[in-house]
Length: 226
Image (cartoon, rainbow, N blue to C red; front, side, top):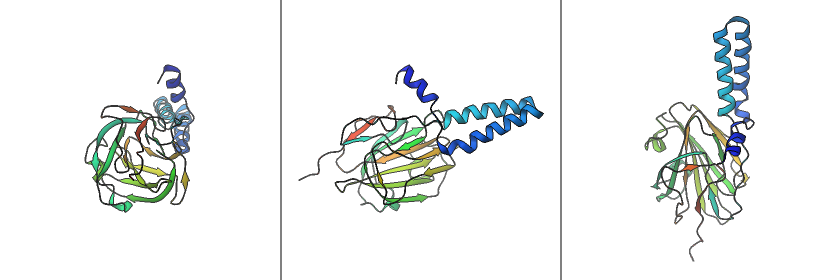
């Protein structure tokens, strides 16, 4: 990402989920102006942090019909195979999995990796372990989406709460048709997003790479075996 793109991302308008926090920061700042310089500065710092954390930049998906895109910004912390969340009622076979860790400095808006129809959404309460921990996929609070592609294959995207993330928001509903790169939710504050790819899909990213949600290509959807 070049300097101009980085600046545009940093000053992007906030996601609607951030409005209460941004307004709250302004309220604390105004109260501080009247009663306390310390409170004034705390309100100002919180307001600026919320503007940055909840930023929601526009993204441009690459024009590749079978490209599976990153569902979130962040760092790839895991590339392996694992069973998809059982609450999604997908076949109990290991699927290629890519886990993306989002720090508090990353954009936290989640995006659809490939166009399809939301087949099922399942929320499961759990722990709040460090989202970079391998155990976070199984033990942390999560919200899982089963996405059915036009050719009938499924993939799964899982929003996972982290050590300080206490709220997962999902804006889509079962039966809804969604486009590649479209926004579907947000997690606050610091989290992880896992994606389970259709069988036979070869990941094109490696652990340690940084992702741009809605733009970075994770994998190419393979042809359906004859």
